Length: 385
Image (cartoon, rainbow, N blue to C red):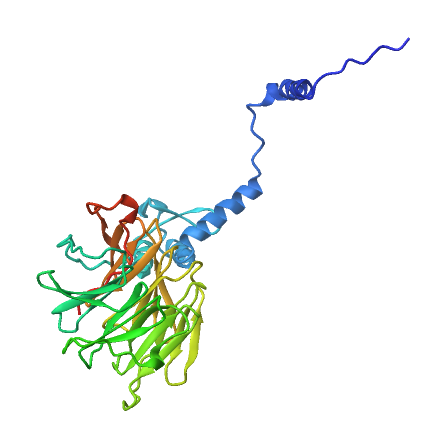
């Protein structure tokens, strides 16, 4: 007659296995395995080479000189300093004054951390309200007398820069106004937006907008600017193109490369004369939302949701990252004093020293009365001319 095998649950079997293992090793659980002398010597030699690799050969040379000196003059080892430095053979070598000098020289050769330039702190000066939608673009007149803003309410407003009072409201767009720029040669204000048009406003005589038919687009226009010569107008559009406009009677002048950022996570440098891309920068992992040129240095910065990056023209050489934001960065700009400012979706503004990338100030925008908290975000910013 066979005995019936008792069935147990998986939990019971696992518990019993654990208990057997515990009982087997309980007697020697405090005993550590023996130290492998060969492996320990290799570990210490690697650590010594990693820490003192730049001066190890000097230590060996001084050690040989010290032995030769002791043999010639029969000096005792007690006359040497008691400071100890590891050598390649994992031995402790007495350090003389010459060894100390060599170590100090090696430390002096190390690249020092750059010291950031001091910049005065920034604070909120004035709040100007009047638009009924998000302010999408801003442009400052070259003489710093007035500035213009474009909004999702389809209206362009011109403000006095000194007092902040409204001077003029321009209507004519049937979509959100996304781009504004002031001509450096004429008293013209150019605007563009989601209505696929580029409008030219004559501010001197306050005339109706001059809109040549050739400046109409087949898609929404996101931004616009003039080149450094002021003779050509450049627009970026939703159909993944960059378009160039110039006066019919204007001569073509030499211009710096044009830099554009896109939602395809790339930055492109364009040759205006040839009309082709010079190089493509793919360091960003997310969409590039803003690009800012340094006013005096031949450099620029780009912003995306991951971080801010600095580049050097004309080859687009990467310089450094400026991490610190915890939100999507929508806009950046830089002034002549080397202060880079960035604005994010969470209402924070960060001020950076351009040369060192040091974040010397952070501001949190207060919620304006009448708007919910999620609305307090930076969409565009610029310095005065």
